[in-house]
Length: 69
Image 1 (tube, rainbow, N blue to C red):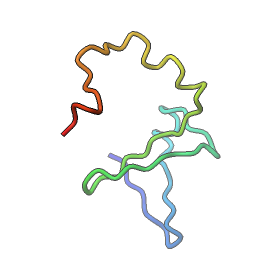
Image 2: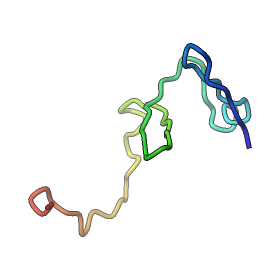
Image 3: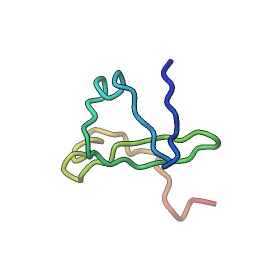
């Protein structure tokens, strides 16, 4: 398990093991999502990087906006 400390400027360092295994680079941007008392940090990607990500996804049984309650 890795731990990091939040600085007085509200900054936090990402442990080197995570940076290396995930291929993170300096200057890379992230999106933060709060889920209960957990923070999820997701690398921001360009449209070109996500193009084709869902190729072959099953679109059957997808609810339409009119079906939402």
